[in-house]
View 1 (cartoon, rainbow, N blue to C red):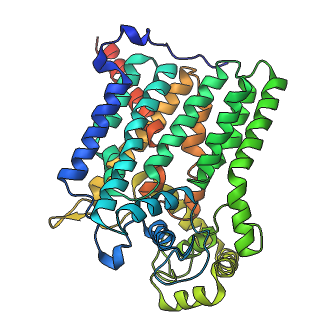
View 2 (view 1 turned 180 degrees about the vertical axis):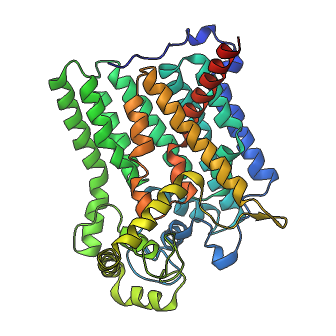
View 3 (view 1 turned 30 degrees about the vertical axis):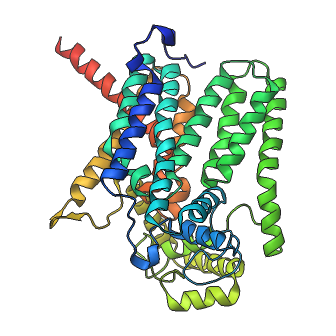
Length: 428
């Protein structure tokens, strides 16, 4: 059985500036300052503001205009299940109140992202405190609060990445608490609600649910009661997502599990004219013929056609598909090789090196966590090893890694502290 990290002393014994609430406040105000002073809310109008949420922004615009959850690209294409519903509905509410693609809406949305980016300081602190002890918890939480890369996502990118990162870290924290107690039924209910919200925010994250439940079952001393609680969690989660599933069935005439755009993503990343990364070719937002086909077939039939094309490619070019997959796996951890020119200087090598060092330190921290038999090693391993697998098949964009970066920060800080301590002991 894994050993739990040293718990901190009571929070009343800590100086106020060590409290997670203070770290949250600093992190939130810092992010608001970057948004306001840096004018990051002035999102480029190129492509009719497409970078304002990309397809989610287009769906939010349709909702705000009273056209329903539809048209994820530039032209009307009918009902959509391109994205999970929660973030587009949040965007549409902002659009209705403050204007579609307006600067005010940009500020509000990025401030909303920043709330969850800052709240993640608290979950990092609580997770770190339970596993590694209070000192490391503070170091990791402060790192997340002030580290420019962690600040970048909520203040620059209109996407669910910051919300997803917070929800996943909150779920990890609740999982650890359930393992250390005899949870009442209401805890299992809230656990199911949280997983349901995650499924409707970032569907890829629910790949972690069976693994988290398996770990809880392994840790449990009362497995019958735990199985009953897990069943309740599943029922509650299903109740949360069922209204959206009913909506999808009513508009498409067949079952669609939350979102339907995976076939297109797999096709555009795996085609003869692709190099293994996402390409603008054949995407209806960029290709006239693809858009025409999208409008003719409707979204669901269009996705079915792309699924057939993807399967045909894999059948005809298995070695190319394997090569693309391995390439994407590497890029997930070292950063994609896209334009990194700033002021006439190419910073792509520096980008690759920084991403690689962060990833290497995270896996080193995972090894140290396993070696020291810390509680939650299996959960961290699932996040680093299992969660990325779907992105090896499609798009390894850095924003898709952001949901697991709070846990990576904990592992990185743990690796650095252990490495420094080891060096100090050897030098002594």
